[in-house]
Amino acid sequence: MVYTVARHFRISPAEVMRMSEKELEYSYVWASAVSRHEAEQMEEATGSAKNQMNVAGTKPGIPMPFSE
Image 1 (cartoon, rainbow, N blue to C red):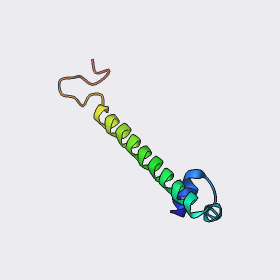
Image 2 (cartoon, rainbow, N blue to C red):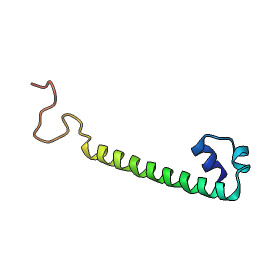
Image 3 (cartoon, rainbow, N blue to C red):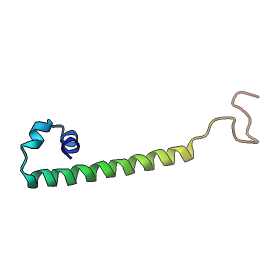
Image 4 (cartoon, rainbow, N blue to C red):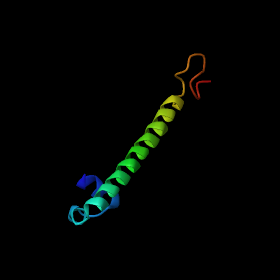
């Protein structure tokens, strides 16, 4: 929990430890939500990129580039 908050807000673990219990809880919830959202965005981006990735000349019936 301390590491997640410190990493997200770019503060030291000592600064996180000085937070009140309520501040730490809110900060952790926020950092976790942002991290989950970023992971979902990354998954969507890489998933669509994988589906669209084509290597020239690997599709049947289409000649290799510069082969003519």
